[in-house]
Image (cartoon, rainbow, N blue to C red; front, side, top):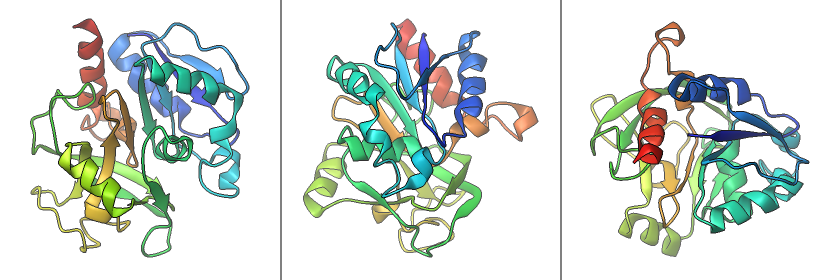
Length: 233
């Protein structure tokens, strides 16, 4: 699997993501600067976490207009695979590649803590190493992770099975109004969503930060291992 990571001014999770990708592919991903206008021949493009452009205006709003994003839109239109994590998820919603928006956390505080995610479907490139209903631990670190969308969009996401992950308790219970299991207040406890063709995934927590025992666990590793297997098939 050939991969590339896009770096914007203020990005700070590109090295974490590179560690995860190198762990499963054996080779370092290509780093792309936001001003680049040529996308190399890759299978996967990753928009990592951080504070692109200092979160000026809105998180991801300015990054959505960077020169590289025109190439990424074209890549998506051709059926390319894209993963956006944290600020990357925010950028995907700002570009319209994924629906909805990420608002300030319900408690108006920056959150940096572990959470648990429940896998909502296991037949996508991003989730097929899990079983539906599996729960895994992953860190989150954001101030604007409160996912929202209009009722029509929510009905479509739920009806078409495009919710990839939900915030949950360690036992898999989902309580949308419980700050212990849904720390940022996201509607329907949504932590990650998919495009209609399931080739684009955006999620707020950071699976790349749990891919090695030295990091405290390998809970996030199945996402990256699954991507490699998807491309091999």
